[in-house]
Length: 335
Image 1: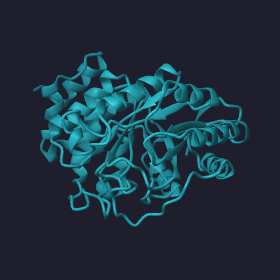
Image 2: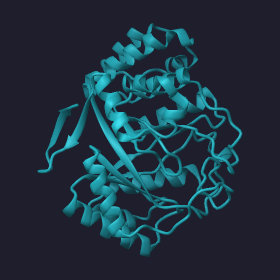
Image 3: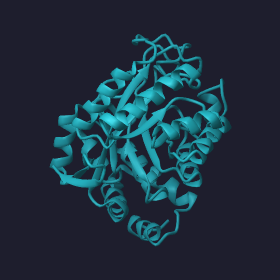
């Protein structure tokens, strides 16, 4: 196993890490984390500089999802104490998009709890997207479950920039997490989104009982699928779900996971996503060394750090936030 500097040099030269090298990142002693972070940051800086992209989520349709994903409080199979409501109106989504833009978000993410969008819901989402693009120009990601070719085409034509559909974990471990659809169903939806002209967003959740090998498999799957944006979530066990009793991860292990994803997917958008606050705790700022984007203002059924706190964190670490100017051009605005 080469040193971490040698691994970063190899990645910067265009060669992917071997599986053994990737596993070694996760197996490294905690005392090695500062060095691993430093070399992951070299890779991150080469591709993204000190820029950070902020994403804000809208839980546009909550609860009653027929799928049985073991981590999800919105599954109809869960007994979680959450709000359950039908799809928000276009007015609601436009208002939330305007607020997200005002808070410095690079992307506004519309998420629904569903196996896939009904024709009625798709009509409403497309209407909202078209209005957002006119009234509050911001990049839009949607996460609406499984797609068909026609539904993917309609989303792209409405102006959706990116479609999210997480693999969640490795192919091997996936049946332990979900039985109502397959790993290949998810890969097919990603293919349809890309063919329709949308960017792809696809990551997973770490801490569900998988092995280090499963985490490595997920990182390499994202690489093989040429995913544009990779959200790395850390399980925040939800009451009423099958994973409610799982222990949270240690902050240092979470940092090693983010570094692994940076080494395997050096040029891609790596996002410190759900569970960041409760798993990384006081080490949250260090996630910016391997990751170049974050969610702020909470997640779907859980709260999170507020935008002003995240902006302060970014500023204190010497990073910059990427915003979209009113004219639609991109600019890096130092905080």
